[in-house]
Amino acid sequence: MPLPETPPTLAAQQTAFAAHLRDPTRHPPPPGIEDRRMAIYRELFYNSVEGILAANFPVIRGLRGDDFWHSLVRDFHRAGSSHTPLFSEIGREFLRHLERRAERGEPDPPFLVELAHYEWAELALSLTDAEPPDCDPAGDLLDGTPVLSPLAWPLAYRFPVHRLRADFQPGSPPEQPTFLLLVRGRDDEVRFKAIDALGFHLLQRLADNPAGHSGRVVLETLAAEAGSADVATFVSAGGRLLQGLREREAVLGTRRPDGRRIGPGSP
Image (cartoon, rainbow, N blue to C red; front, side, top):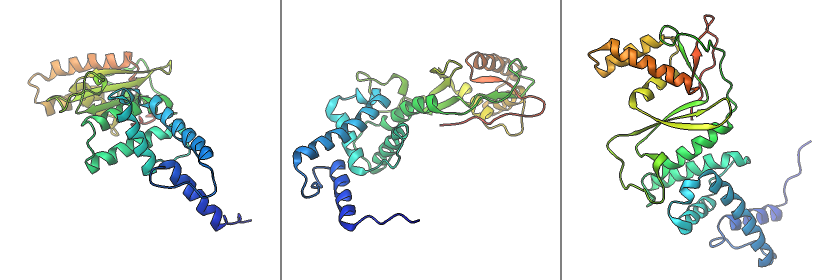
């Protein structure tokens, strides 16, 4: 049985009510509602979303004081950028909103979108329901096919996002990019580690290895691409790196002979 249509007057009132809550300075409240009551709704609406965002993006919240932070949140409200009913997804919507601000050329800090992505990724990784693949945890990482954990995300940024604070806000990116590895361990804690370019590219290759190349072949390919004159030394160093990644629970082991595995997730 179809649901009855919303009466036009009620629909108009709901639209006006929502528009006023998002942007009280531009949209008047629906007629017939006293401002004292509307003020309660305005405060509840703003504070609930602002509190979620402040918890999701604590570094951005503390960067440049209250005025900067609340201007970002109010702009998010005005734009009506959030289309999700899930509180856990509001952070992702806020990140997309900041990306659109950057595309418009808003005078935000040049690192703001990258910092927002870094803070969002930590939350997203803590909430993902990706399951670890079936693999051999004691397998030989050079002769076997290393299996990357779906709870290990290699990330690359122009700015050192893990170091940004109120007293450290560079106006331009350094010459060298920042590579980070976020891992959710067996204890469900999310940890990050700064890694070098080799570690980042190795993790990328492990995440995209449909042919099932061995760790040795992956490292030999990277050595050739890097123009290494001593492939054996490069592979030996890479083997130690793989072992370190296993100790950090980023690499879980090697693919079993029957090939069963689950591809890693990505932010």
